[in-house]
Image 1 (cartoon, rainbow, N blue to C red):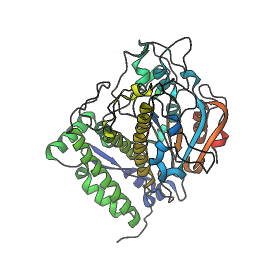
Image 2 (image 1 turned 45 degrees about the vertical axis):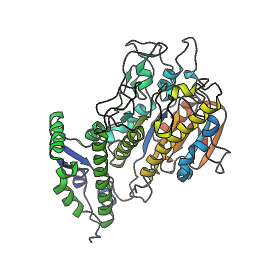
Image 3 (image 1 turned 90 degrees about the vertical axis):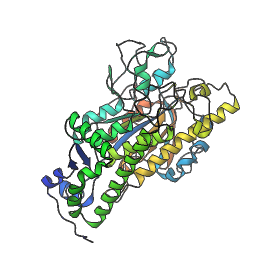
Image 4 (image 1 turned 180 degrees about the horizontal axis):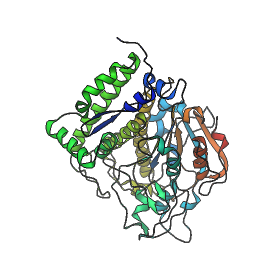
Length: 453
């Protein structure tokens, strides 16, 4: 086996950031022997930032950690995250005051989603005169997006809704979009993992990508078949350890292709509250995991460093037959202290935690050139815009942060903030951590030094 470590020059590296074929550009992960020549010895591994949104609040007693500092214990509904405990930090005491009802009255679900990353109060309208605020991910993308193929990636497991009234006179756009490019323009997320896959690995014009996809479907060939010769040539230039990493990566891409094929054969599920894309998966957990895998692939290949993922919109009334729950999530969240409904909410919280844990495991299994994992070089915020869905509380928000930004943020801690602090303080802290200049954000009052190492 060839263990030599060739030195790539910059031009060679730029040519091999993707393996190319007809209608295909298969981005490759950051590899030690390739990146050494491109960026120089000891170059910093890029950091990634993602936000995952939990809808409808949580069973607060079962979700929140027990204790503070390093000696904390995970809440019972988050037990699936046990193996990642030391790479998680929980922050208690954050609130979105712009989510609470005011003169604009009802509409807590719309405000919860719209204010989550903007820290702004959305204008109550069902028309085209939308107004919220630029979201923190898009602020980061404006500064960091030029370094990657895509400035940011917006994902969802809901259908796309840009208009119409969804919550007490608020436009559906507020509930179905996390990311906002400006105060008036949401960044529409993609909910079909096949289309995300083709976006990440397609090449050429839209017609060329479509023709490539059609050819692969008709011949039942893999995307990898279209870059076979180039991948073999590129592999020969790598050190043995990177050859192994490349093989693992290509095997993972092929596995996702197979899962996408099964997903597209599943038919349309019974989910009347969603406007679903063509050929969505029949099982919600598989939809969540495929979209999570798309996010991991985008980070692994450095296709983007900024992502948002709407697990479901606030107010979603999806049922969860996979865990034996036939009632809708939103209906259960208004439990009126019914013990049975509260217990079912904890099961839904656990279901989401299982999907989150699977994504973290994928990130943690991908080694970076400095020996640490992709998770170590990421910051994944897993949180929601409501705590107690029964009373529509926008304070004491459920907030977990995984990864630690390459050592810049604390991990393995439960932090209880003094008093109530704006969620915008966390968002401002993240901008600073990622080197994005900002003196304030939304209704922030200052960064959270408690999170820093």
